[in-house]
Structures are given as C-alpha cells and as structure tokens.
Amino acid sequence: MELSNKQKQFLKSAAHPLKPVVMLGGNGLTEGVLAEIELALEHHELIKVKVPEDDRELRQAIYLTIVEHTKANLVQSIGKVAVFYRPATEPKMRLPR
Image (cartoon, rainbow, N blue to C red; front, side, top):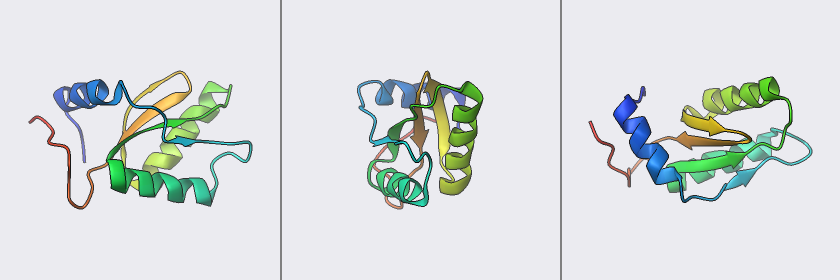
C-alpha cells in the first residue's frame, strides 16, 4: 500500500504523542522482535520502534527489513526512532484520501 503525502502527514501527527512500542536490544533484529512488531502493528496499526544503533546505514537496513517482513509502511524515521503503519484486519484509523 502506497501512502500519499497527505496520509503520511496525518500519520506523522497521529504518531507524535506515541511512545516507542518496541525497542531493539543488544541482539538486534531477531525473529522474536519481528514477531512482537507484527503483534503491535495488528493491535495498534501505527507504532514507533526504537533502534539504538549508532550506524545510520545499519539503522536504515533494519527499517527496510522490518518493512519487508511486516509489509508495513515506513512513515518516517527521526534519529533512532521510526514510525510504521499497517492497517489492521479491522482498521481503527481512517486515513484521509
């Protein structure tokens, strides 16, 4: 699902007050972490993930891996926090057109 600029802007504003739901630990992006991200996306639709990695390119690779594995959209990434969106089977959020 491709998001329009208007939809991304709406999601960014909705994500602003959220706290990170998933934080990667010392083991990095494991199957358990990916499963937790899947559950969080299904339950919340819009989540923040904190990646405490200092290397920017490695963080971007982790974000892309999350997108590929979960089929979610990367709404934005600022510093070490990324915002992901995927509509649930019964969507709770209504995106603008």
